[in-house]
Length: 157
Image (cartoon, rainbow, N blue to C red; front, side, top):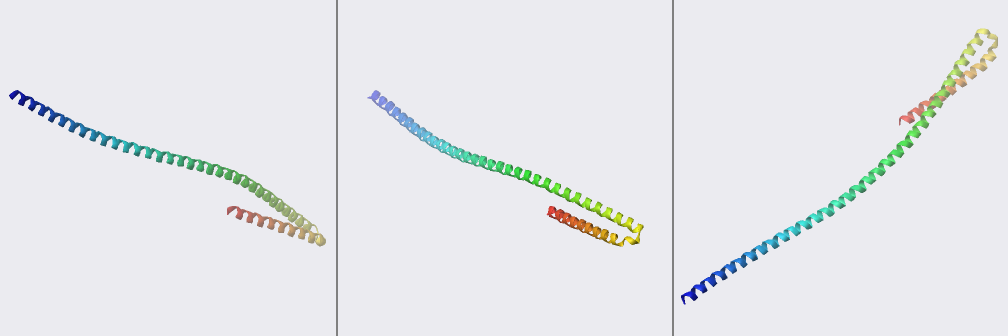
């Protein structure tokens, strides 16, 4: 009976150990399940973050493409402005040449008038017509100068 009691005590101790082991095993399974759930949540968070990052990357690519298109448009506009500026420089040069010609014409007419006046008072009729040509050349020069000044003001704005 003593042996049987000892065997029963050993069996009871073994059953308690099995219960403890099962409890530890259940606790470890619970902790493992919680850890798996945390890792699955983390993986889901990372996947969501990756999707957001990919969307932002695509948006950035589109923004960059739009900026590149804007830059191309600006470059084309700058080229157009350069061509326009060259045309305006040529026009100004033409106006300056016309003004110089008008001034030379005016100087020539003045010199001719002075020579004729020194030759004879009798040529008043001829002097009168030259005087008229002088005024016309002067008016033309003033008109050319006025147009040039207006054009230069236009270019400044």
